Figure: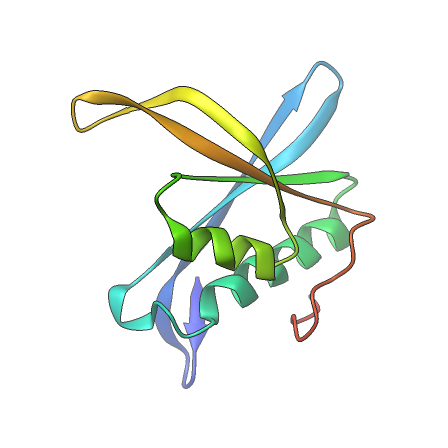
Length: 119
């Protein structure tokens, strides 16, 4: 749960294990309630989740995906220390058509974003 101010719920973050052969990584996601979007809460929550996962698991990589038209989420991921890696073509069927996604990653060795909370 993403909590703000007096512990009011602003949304949630989630994570799931992904992997290729013997190397596993985390994929994270976030959903904020409309009233809390655009206030800098999202990138801080994502950065805090990354800090937590790196501190408490052996994973080397954390990945996030977003739609190419979701500029706000792309900025949020970049503020949270993620780097844009590329496009996944036709990965999701939505609203009657196949859609692309952009993939971002943050590695353990990447610097923690400035002003990000430490888990």
